[in-house]
Image 1 (cartoon, helix red, strand yellow):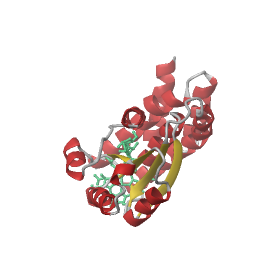
Image 2 (tube, protein in one colour):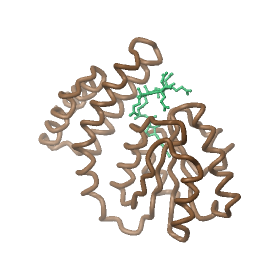
Image 3 (cartoon, protein in one colour):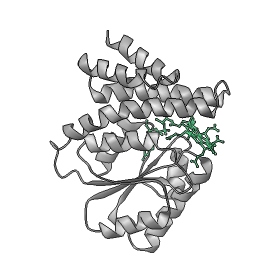
Length: 215
Ligand code: HCB
């Protein structure tokens, strides 16, 4: 059944199965499962287990990198499908997505970006390791558009930059131009309040929901 396929795919991520992961993803699609469910029920929970295993020191960096590669291989199949599904909801707005300077963790960022696109947002993906000045410039360039800034940080160090980007936007009189959602494993509600951002989310599906609410 479906759960069995999801579990196999989750295991493929956890067991660093770089070839099996895209193959199982295709199998799940062929079985009629949606790209959305494949991400939320299998791939993302698989990466969560990988993160927990790393924290428990049962695996090390090379294994994480292989799991990340397996994840990427699956996402290369799913991203075009999600991009195609987009477009039925018009005028949702623009989502400017990025990962803070000093931070190259891109798995969660890509998931969130993909999910926002699938929910009708026009995407401007700035990428990873992005200086705050570049973020502010992107917002300034798109001034007047309905916009949400969607930032990720996976490290307690890079997360500090989120507060600075809000302050920079205030200094440039751009804060009122844009809603702001920050996320990533270390981000808490308290941190969002301290930054003066508008919201956060635990996962990519919730991120799309929160972003739609904020617009
Ligand atoms: Co990396 N790493 N890492 N890492 N890494 C972390 C993040 C640690 C927490 C692991 C640890 O030590 N406990 C740690 C950071 C510690 C800290 O806080 N200071 C850490 C470190 C230290 C490092 C290095 C310095 C190497 C090292 O350990 N010595 C190095 C730093 C590189 C750099 O950025 N400069 C490094 C490298 C790597 C890789 C390359 C091996 C690999 C990244 C591969 C890649 O992204 N292409 C990696 C990974 C995979 C992790 C862990 C294991 C998993 C991260 C991940 O992909 N999670 C992570 C451990 C952990 O997080 N518990 C570990 C899965 C995704 C799906 O979850 O949280 O990113 P997510 O995103 C979610 C969610 O947060 C939300 O939705 C997403 C989808 O569900 N969300 C948003 C995300 N963004 C949002 C934005 C919004 O507005 C709203 C919601």
